[in-house]
Image (cartoon, rainbow, N blue to C red; front, side, top):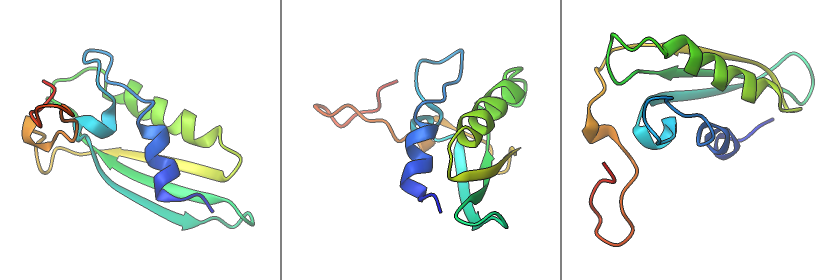
Length: 106
């Protein structure tokens, strides 16, 4: 089975096309649920994410990017990505901080 740390590594390779920060550090990933698939040794992954604004037209693009990258891994059977706006995303949800100042990168 895949680990959550490995899933996070992949999420850090997925970007909002309008913001040069990965989806994980933007705080757009709300939950990761990993379950053993019927196929031995493989995992099914359910991700709940949000968008920076409800009007963002890139939501399906980002969800497809996550799904495609996860499903390309040998240890993943299926990946599902749900988009929600509860709670609404805000900049306080960002994980990325400057190493020198401790302030948010944006």
